[in-house]
Image (tube, rainbow, N blue to C red; front, side, top):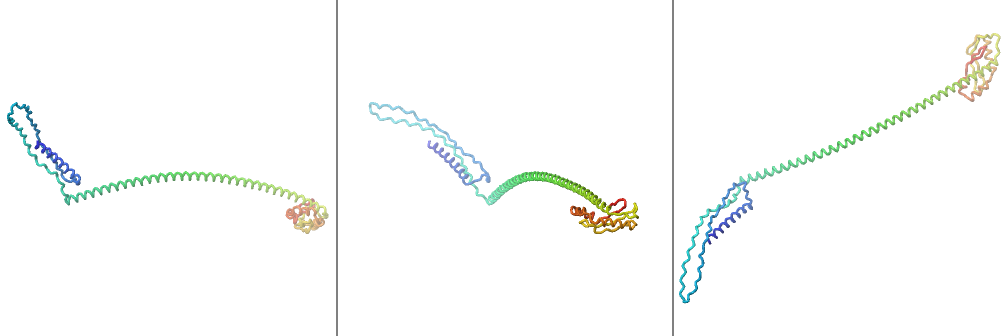
Length: 307
């Protein structure tokens, strides 16, 4: 029994040492990927459980009436000796971490640097992609906003142009209407002025004719026909009269060829002397007097007198 308990304790101790060694390796930072892992074959302990049969208890015999010395008990049979366990194979010691050599450290450092550079490169590429994506989104947003603003500006320009064109048409229409009204008014004024001028001219002619008849009648009333006068004779006289109607001068501008006839015509004008109605005309219409009676020509004929 003692041997059997000793073997059990040995197995537990080995298992504990094995697990403790592995835990130490993990805690100490042992990296199995850089060292060749050796598979450790677990150790098995073969043991045989032996059952020892105890001898059946002997019944106690009552003591005889007479005290007799007890007989010695027969010796108990020796239990069978358990088979000796097989010797355990030596337990392989857990592989101790080998110290890293300079080459391995350099390779490891290079690999770490490469991994770090790769991560930095990936991070930079990711940052660049994100930055480009943000820039692209911002550019698209700005382009969309610009397009909206340009469209709104074009629409506003079109509205302003349409409004300006409409206002221009309205102004042009108003200007045309105003010009037409002014032209119509001017034509009406011209027509009215022309009509007034024609009426004034007609009135002036009528006045000239009326006052001319008056002058002829006055001269005819003061003329004495000379014996040498004939029907086809005529003399042209130039007469000058002042606004008071007084005759200032009379002269022959074209003779009839007969001095007596010419002198008879001049004497008729001088005898008339003063034309009172011409004084009235000079006060009423000085311009008409100046144009027609201040200085005028009279054709004197025996049969009739004409201005």
